[in-house]
Image (tube, rainbow, N blue to C red):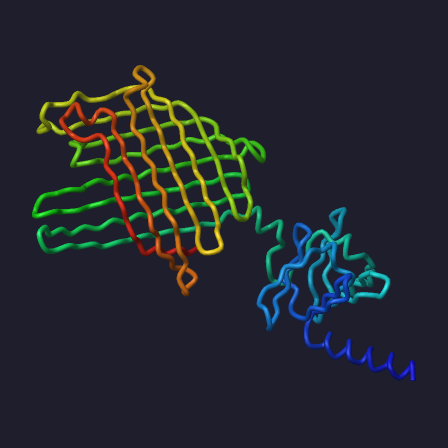
Amino acid sequence: MNKLLASIAALALFTVSSNGDVIVTKSGSTIVGKIQEIDGGKIKISTDFAGDIVVDQTQVEQMTTDDPIFVSIEGGASFSGKITGSDDGSLNVATETGRMTTSVSNVKESWQIGSMSPTEKKMRRSWAYLAAFDLAGKSGNKSSTGFGMSFRATLNGPDDRLAFFSRANFEETDGTKSADDARVGVDYSNQINDQWNWYVSSELGRDVIKDTDLFVTTAGGFGYTITNTDSRFLNIRGGVGYRFEEYSDFSTPIREQLNAASLDFGLEHKETLKWGTLVNRIKFTPTIEDFGSFRLYQDTALDLPLKADQYSVRLGFANDYDSDADLSGKKELDTTYYIRLVLNWQ
């Protein structure tokens, strides 16, 4: 009877194994699916019943694969072949040159044949894009029309990041412009270590309402990453730069051109929540000669995902403060509230 039960159990395990890769945990649970990769102590397996599942490698007793798979062990050696798990916790990899024996704990990386290894993915630069657009209108006691848009293209590498960005806002109220500003820029940062990085950035734009025909800020310095996890990113930076601003000849009173060395301070924050993503960006550029002469830009937004993975709705507000705007008879602070449709793609 015992032999019969053992034969039935072996047959059941063979049947399960033949229908997919198998992971057996130390608690006795069995997960059947397709092992996509092992990286950083985590095993990612795709299943029909629960999508992608991530299992802690230290909790896995054994695993078996239906098809050949790449395996990299501690020490740097890599093999490809079908994996067969044993009761003693060892793994047998049937390679073209013979059989290699290791253990689950000794596997550093694993990946599907035809795919890049986790290390290669981390070393590869890739582009990510974001485009946002909103259109607004109002009628009644006052009529207004307006739209805003922004675009960001980011090239992410293992140790650096290059970002191109632009944003613009236009609005007309009762036939008179109430908002007309645009800016474009580029930002490059390079990691020195896990916390410290250096950066250079440049930005130019205009603000018709504040009679600014052209403003340019260029800066460079060092940044410090306070935290960088899957759910949270927070980086602060500081450096020195240069500010140039040219104003309209029609401003009253006429404002003198600005050419001045400046300081540069910034903050970038991204928080992934259960129901959305919170993004904060702040840039503060006072002149060195007069610390009371500065520009401050802040943008806070909440992205709410839609059913289509690439789309989200962005709710936010932005403040653009020019401490010297009163010199030309304008208000220092402009605040923009927006609801935008956002498209992300790679």
